Length: 131
Length: 274
Figure 1 (cartoon, chains in turn green, red):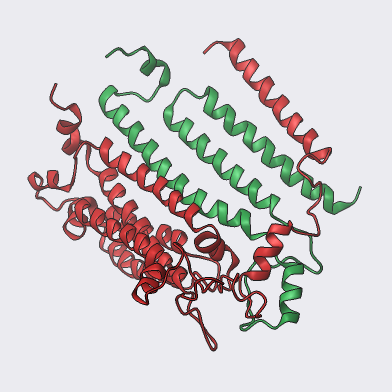
Figure 2 (cartoon, chains in turn orange, purple):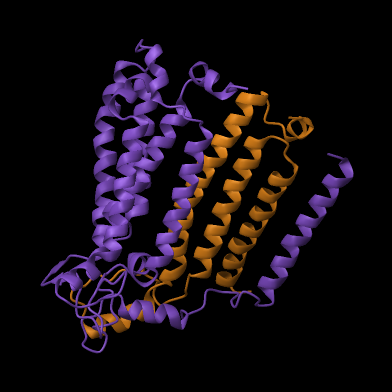
């Protein structure tokens, strides 16, 4: 087996394993804090996976989608299109990260209020509460 | 949680990993190695992101950085709604805090807390560095990787550091929740105005333009200056990035203040009136 596909598949497979482990944390751990940590790992893994999907193989190496020569001569632009990676997944992930941060803070606020009012973050105890 | 359920969850998650690995191996994602070509959509983006050629002049975003061009030009409306998602998350957190604010600290007028002199001095130096790095990320958003979101999230680290080193009592004398929320609203209003600015310019000239228009298009020859011989100005991208930084940084600042309020201060508010 060639080395390059092997290493690439190892990376993608480890992301899959990461997804499974973070989902296990969300499903099984009773503490809300642990659930939120697992959820953060999950979203970060998905973001990395999206970036990997936008990656490309280029000779000699892929470059970031930034035009460096200004004004760009047509020759440079032709080479740029042949080498630059896909910018669309990066643009999607960029906003997803900040929104993830805002949602994370919202979840933390909710958990903090639950802890202040009920004195626990254990979902088994919270689900038994009435009123 | 029963032991059986836990075993079932572990087995199903293992099966999920094996299934995803199968999909990858059979080429379900469209690749098993990084492909040597990008999608045709990406080719269009890369070709038109900064192109002075007359053929591409009216479809180009005139920003050397393709990611910022996509975020605020090609898919500008998309990003506007993503900003509104963040807006709603922050509003939800503010609502959950039930009106708790730094006013509660008035009763506790002592300026206790805070770390030692060494930490405070180092923080004073670091804050300037963080702010300048964040501003540079923002203002070069149309030239180098970066932009409003990243710059804002970087600057939002500064108030967090200040709160931890100087204690919330001292920090709330500098920036209050209402001040932070006001600055954040100014940022959001600026984003809304930037979306309409080309239309406003066109109406002043007695013509019409598109909403979220950046560069001159085929049927509407108005646009903000973007390229003036060697200088790349970025058109509306620069405005969007600046206002987005304001909105993100101060939105997070307001949340951090509410998050760090001491327990004994908010206890009365949390219990609420029955």
